Image (cartoon, rainbow, N blue to C red):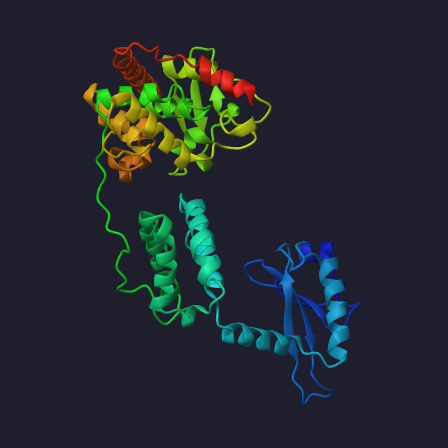
Length: 420
């Protein structure tokens, strides 16, 4: 019999090989070349008790302790296990009981959610957002309950709590819970879907709000006198068509070539809703806004002290609406910050920008950039995006300069920021 060492393992032919130094320890080499370590034992004395074979692990594969299976590690584990076997321990029986106990244990909603996120949602571009929704709204309320025991009333309990503060978000929570439970049913982890036939808790209407030029001018000038940095954020949202959090959580390291020929914002995949990195060219007015900002010690462009992203969106939006009302003499029809993004897109189309360029500016991966076209068409439209946003910036300046106020007068904002 050979001595099972690294050198022997590397050269061993197919078959079962037993170690000459440790009885019961062996190596099996399959025809495919796969090498695995095992121990062979009997549960009693004599041939009346047939031999049993327990696999320790596969050579080169990860071991339970995080290391890698090698000849020496397998020998050490075999020596430990054979000692327990002499004391009456049966590793195969222990494994069988463990498997049965695991099958008998009824998983909780938290167990189902963790496995669903790992197995089904890992490649989803919005997995971080989905996980955040589940951890914030679902798991604290029903995560500890056995999944099989979940009833429709439990689902309604979750949705009602979400609806109290965020009616539309309750629909999103229901959609993701439904997807999770249906996945669990398909994997035979649950007998039925507790969200089946539950209607959306909130009726949604497709939003088509676009601010006209007059409204855009009112918002731009109302933002001028607001406390740092919200007014500047609003103006950058108007000029770039970015999402709220893309600007609110902007870092200085993402602002590139501000004093050069290609000023831009570079957003990594983790910072975009689609999970796809993108470049946002900065027009002249946008560059002027960023140049006027004070450089603070933290990495964030906005937010108190630069140590984190901007917070307090709801309060700041209410103040902005009050300023718009005072400026216009009457409140504007209801609008949201996200409507500025739609306004930018509509404005680009009105300026004659091609649809695919507009979608590239917004970072959309659907529409003209979806399906087979999206797979094979990898051009990022960077020159076209820059030209489009420069044209949009000129249009915005033309609109806002029709008023007496200086559209880029950020001195008051900067003074407030420096005073902090």
